[in-house]
Image (cartoon, rainbow, N blue to C red; front, side, top):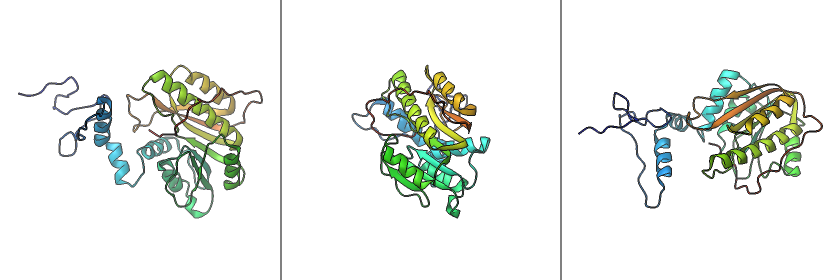
Length: 263
């Protein structure tokens, strides 16, 4: 007897909530081994990872995360990464974005600079300077200024607060990190610089966009194909940095931080 499912196409190909096929090249859906105590949501996440074509592409190309594919797709369309830029990557673990920037900005030529910052240790990326610490720490800011010889042409952030499963809470925590990232960018960006950061769509993202509009010539929302359609994840690309308004104030950051996790 054939199994019926609301998520199956006429061809019988099983699909996830994103609409992408969960079938392998052999025509079979790869399933993770079930383990006692694992939540159904974790089982679904593992199934999605095993069958995600962008995960497979990232692995086949030697990228440390599928997030690298997202950055490539955004840059392919908007071409904001140029050779010999001075770039700071906030929340850089595990290093996928660093790998993309190294290649596209041709940092290996000795021109330009790339600095990655994270609370976690990151495996070395040849040509990049990696700092372990909190981006709100003045000592980290001083090290960045030294590494990039003054100001940065671009500040990138794929940071997201550790998720709780409660959408509104996760949105507010990530928006808090966004404001911290923007505060950092205010202090290091050169005139006409760019800021690219991950955001979660929700009630307060409009307020954050207004803050960007005060500082930059142009602000756009981006949703690369590798970002799952069912995810509230989006990216904000701001170009043409004009400087921060003198009376700007930032809200307090979330009290508890367990690290930065690119999705």
